[in-house]
Image (cartoon, rainbow over all chains, first blue to last red; front, side, top):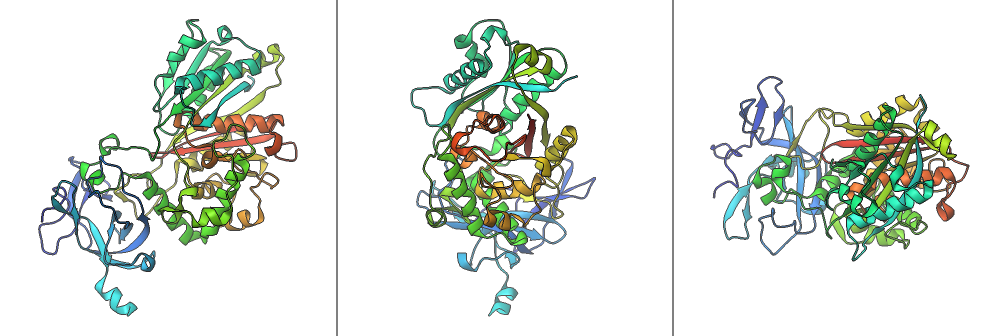
Length: 135
Length: 381
C-alpha cells in the first residue's frame, strides 16, 4: 500500500517518519518542507504522547478524503525525544486507555479514501514494551 | 498629546439575521455609533473596516453617504477587528485626523470554519487525512494544559455556564438562555474534552466604534472613554498553533503574552489594576488559558478562581460580561470590536442586568486567532 503522499516515510521496513532539519539552526519539523533550507532526516520510531483528542464528527470534504461512513478516531501529538512533536492518528488503543505520557511507536495505518483507494497515513500505537509493562 | 478616545459605539445583534447582509449589519452599527456620539457621517474623516467573509467594508459608503471619506479595508484573520481599531487609533495619534471609525462585521455559513491546506502553506494530504479541523487543535491544546496545570473538565463547564448566564442578560448576544452545568458537561462531544456547549460557532454581527482625539472629544462635549493601549502582535518561536503537523519540543511563548505585556507597559498599569476583562473564548478552555497568558492569574489558579466565582459579574475580575464568543458566536470581523463595545458599556455603567459592580474604571480586551495573532486593548474612563 502506498503512503498518502511521497516523502513522508522512509523506504525501510518497518518505516520511519521523515522530518526536515533546518540546515542553519538544527530545528526539526514534520513534514520536511520542499525547500533547500531543510534536509530530510528519519525521525525516532518511538515517542511519548504529548496530547490528544477524539475526533467525534466527520471532517468537512473537501479537504477530508475519508469514507462517507464515519467512526470517531483518536488523534495525538507525539513527542519524539530531542526532535519534534508530530501530529498523527492513534491506533490499537481504547479511547479510555489513552493518557498523556504513554509510550508509543510508529506504525503507518491504512486510510480508506472515499474514492475507493487505500493509502497509508502516519500513526502511532502503544509501544509493545509499554503494553507488557502495563500487563 | 492627549489620549485617543472612544466617543461613540454601535452594535448589530450577533447571531443569525436572515435577509440582512454583513455590510447591512455593519451600516446598522455605524448609524447607532453616530447617533450615540451625536455626529453625522460627513463628520467622519476616515474609516478602517474589517470583514473576513462578508465582502468589502468600504462598500458601505453606498448606504452611509458618498462623502469621499478615506476608507481602508482590513482582512487579518481573527485579529481583523483589533487590527482595524489599532490602525484607526494610529491615524488619530499621528495627528493626521481627528475623528475616525473602526467598524467590523461578518456573516459566516453555518458549521465549522472551512479551511483548506493551501491557504496555510500545508500539503494536500494533511487535509485529506482529516487534520484541517480547528476543534482538534483547541482540544489537544487544552487536554495538555489540563494535565499540566490540574484543571478539571468541570471547570471548562463552569466557563460555559457563566457565558450563557451572562449572555442571557446581554441584548446583543446570540445565546440568550442559561444552560445548566450538567447539560453542558453531558452534551454531545465534539472533540474531547469539549462538548458542543464548550465551543462557539461562526455567526453574524456588526460593531462600530467612533474614535476622536482628546481635544476633539472635549470640543464635542463628550465624556470620552480613553484608549490607553492597543497592541497587535504575531507569534514568537515555539508557540503551538492551529493546523500544526508538528510543534517544537522546547515550546515557547505566545502572541497573547507579548501583546498583553506590551499593552500593560504602554498603559502604565498592571493586571491587578483591571476592573473588567473580555478574553477570547472561542472555546471554554481558551478563556482559562487566556486568564493566565494575559497575566491575571498563574497557570493552574483558574481551577480555584472558577470554583470561587471570581470571574462572575460580582467577582473580583468579571470576565466576558456579555457571554463572550460562547454566547455571542464569532463573526470574525466584528468579534474583537464587540469586546471593546462591551467594555465601553461597562465603563459607562450602562450594562443593565449584566453591569459589573464597583464602578469599574479600567477594562481589558483580548483577541487570539490563527495562526498565532493577538490583539489587546486597555480602556480607562
